[in-house]
Image 1 (cartoon, rainbow, N blue to C red):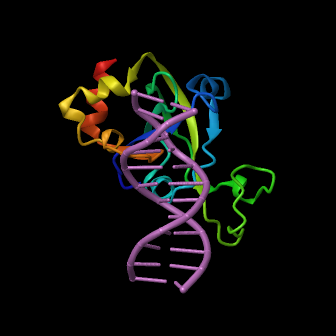
Image 2 (tube, rainbow, N blue to C red):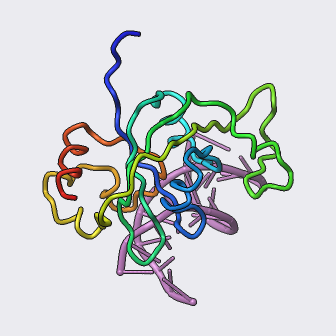
Length: 155
DNA sequence: GCCAACGTTGGC
DNA sequence: GCCAACGTTGGC
């Protein structure tokens, strides 16, 4: 091991599809269904087991950070891309050359309260976060170490 | 449900 | 390689 620093991430999920409570119940879950190249590259090239993750609820009444998770595997091919019955099926992806990758994500804890998107927007220290940039739709993105600490302190 | 912002696709 | 059309994301 080369002492690679722990990196920090934010991963979005629609709570109606998969919530922080679902992750707590299941303990570990394969983060399938990411179909965006930039998000895939973060998982494939950036994430390593042990990295910390903000679990974010999107497309819901109160969007925001609701919990902490941890990367629990290196990236591997997302099985749903080969499953014709899955809504994530990608007929253009070949088994010899998988297009979509995922990591396993492990539950760490649920925050005592939701740190809402609205609240995050009010902190100048966070204004450079990709999450807060206008029009951003990335579902997997890096979080700076300083921003990570800052947000944790808001809880 | 609306719609702005963005990514992808495919015709040329 | 351009770009219009289309689909998706996600806040509101």
